[in-house]
Image (cartoon, rainbow, N blue to C red):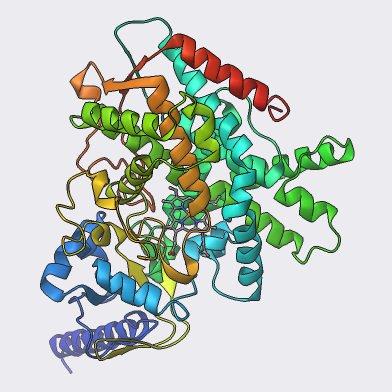
Length: 529
Ligand code: HEM
């Protein structure tokens, strides 16, 4: 054999081995957890990565675009995981509500479940369905159900007061208005309520407090790691070798452990000195008959902290932003008139805590939740039984994604969905079921929805009667008011992170506000620890 022939043989063998290797790699890495689902539209995908590149960072919008061509429900592949995605109001209703006993579990994801959550356990919202999840969900639901929330109204009184008071202090005597970013104040409001329920104490310091900022930053980082558009390594195992994500997740876990241990230590000190207030962790620590383990207790506390921290403050902020926008003056006028009709004795500040009766403010809160869908892709589910959708049998073990943003903007359900129009939620008959999907739907729907709704109602009533809300004087600092995706600083995150903006405020009646503050100070004197 000449050296030329030898070279050709070597090249040929090399190419054969390369081909076999490529086929083997494809067979090994291009498989999905659930095989292709027959009779269900599928978005064409590329090997190994599936639809990851195609969906990019703004998944809700891209998926909604695809639904115009492929129909409301279709299958996609993100790396080696198959997902069924629902994009319309009706399809979400049918899959999430009519099949709620099937869509009851949650997926496990590499970064979140193997790297990040190893020390404090999973939150309820990230736990697959098993006996422990059932117990934790039941305990958390009991802690924040309707009757329990009524007993927390003194805390809502205190926290909404603290936010508005700090805001009023920032306004000072300046005329005609002061432009402020009130987001940190709303974050403290939500976090303090969670801390009070979980540990029996609050952060009394300013909204810029170091611990508060640390919790907010870490929880935001962790929530971003749960998103389906952020962590390719969750779906393409090969990428785990090179990924920085695991280091980032370990660092976040270390920081979360530090403040969770601090909070627990502080509570134990209070219990030892008899200075503790009733709270979930305290009840569990003190009650030997309690059926939850320590790990489960910690999971509930992390859930309480994480659950409302990104979501409620963003809704409060976007609601206030809306009131500062072009529709704002008319909305404020209408809401104030309705508040004065509902609470005619000028005591709305106090009565809104006890009676959530102003239907227009309720409708405004629902429209804020719909329009500003702050968890646009909701939280993923995994089915535990086969589900049938228009002739297709979707096998148990499939992951489902709710495009809540698309469902909330579905023009077959909502007239002019891109308009902010609270009236759409007036005169809705009792028992009409889920009116929007911002809290998810069905068996694993948000357990904190009553608490969040009450927080929003009280805070908006109080802001409206205390302050006039105006557009920021500098137009470049005004919010984008077209919807959550346009105003999102972190498109790959799980929840919307509002872009930074300012809102103009002016105190309506200083003397009236002083009296309102005084009322809360007297009523909550015993709570302000
Ligand atoms: C405006 C505020 C809030 C919004 C928009 C919101 C949204 C959501 C969404 C979309 C889900 C997923 C539901 C599903 O899969 O169907 C969820 C789950 C959950 N939320 Fe909320 N949430 C809010 C406030 C809260 C608060 C204040 C708490 C607790 C104090 C909380 C606790 C939970 C828990 C525990 C789950 C997991 C339920 C489960 O997996 O069984 N949320 N939330």
